[in-house]
Image (cartoon, rainbow, N blue to C red; front, side, top):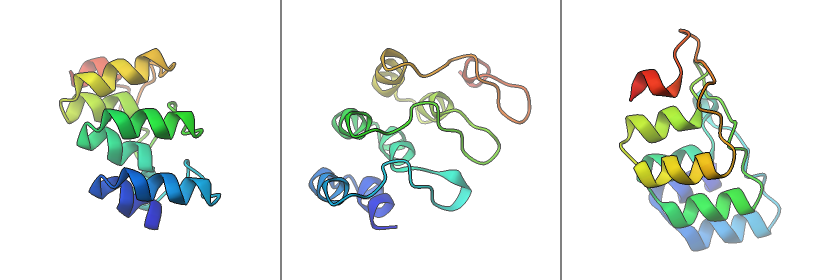
Length: 105
């Protein structure tokens, strides 16, 4: 979707415009990925904050039940990890293989 492409490309202004036009920040693309997943993958702390402020769900799970914190660990983004934890992301949520984000660290 346009929201996912904008988040993936780091275009904060476009993301905010799309959200202000009413797009759901929790809209899922292939694999259950949301705009927040893209922002975390990019380590874009400003976009992460804006998405959360706009209602992005920090408990979102992708295909395979991967927790958003797992993305922060796998993409080596300690700032994203802290931000997500500060906003209530659960570090004990297990993926489809029974592993928590701590197992991926």
